[in-house]
Length: 235
Ligand SMILES: [Mn+2]
Image (cartoon, rainbow, N blue to C red; front, side):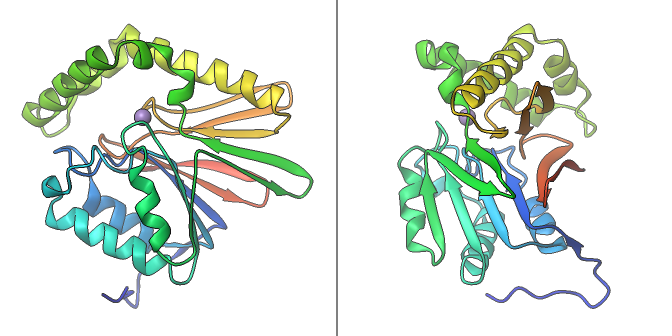
């Protein structure tokens, strides 16, 4: 499959793109939109920050999910792809070392201009999930179901997400623990996912970013160009 670019398509430029939580195989993943986004960017490096797959069941993948996977394999011929494992796709990511120029990590570190960077999915900072795997699985399924039966503008699921204390606590916890981890590891920038809420914080010299997800609107992504980090939204 060839990546074709339309003549008039405006190409945005960035060095690194960070995306996470596609949950391919679940009914709410927005693979068509991810394809659109990847095609609209001119980038050098792609970091897939975990939970790209919902689970190991490939039978659930739709045509559009396969299209996205073909696109990623096509990208991997020319550009560096970093695949960071999430809790949903643990182990599965190893298969993708078969793609050219693709590497799999649990924790990915790099340096730029004397600054240190680290990317980790973030479930490592979520002991609720680890202790109550079954509970959070149920909560997640219920939320996905509500999203499916929701109005087109997703007003019910967005309301739940805004009001849910659990969600808020999770975002807080992951952010705080990630910042602490970054300080201990002496890195300047830490990138996480897992909470499905995009986020941006700074504590002292430490910068924390969360790339959000692609199972909800707006879906979010991070661009990293020189030392400039931005969170982009995609409706
Ligand atoms: Mn996760």
